Image (tube, rainbow, N blue to C red):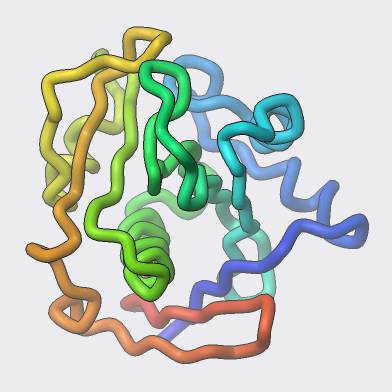
Length: 181
């Protein structure tokens, strides 16, 4: 089975990661990787934590969280907030997005998190169905940009239940196995 790894973004991989394109949803439902990194730099109060997502040595996605942040709604949602999730359009439909969320859940659970929050633009072609299939439910609140806020109760989900195998690869890389395409 191919393995997904979350890796730090460095000078060596920055251009390759910035080239990840989510497809038609990019710009409408999610910002580009480059814009996301810029937003992280401009929003330090959100305590941004971001990683490139690799599959078989190739960057295929990007994930960014507010990492154990002090909430200040509606601008700063947290403490654990899935801020950005992109999978390159060439790799949609392979379970990579689900594997990323599973890995995020595992990582933040280890830090004591009890819930994961995220938000999304409401609209045709948006990620609402994806998040629904993962078990995230609307909180009834909107963020400062009018996006619907969703919540995943970490007590009700388990990475072991997903059938994936987890391994610690290096101090800066986490790997998760996903089903082959």
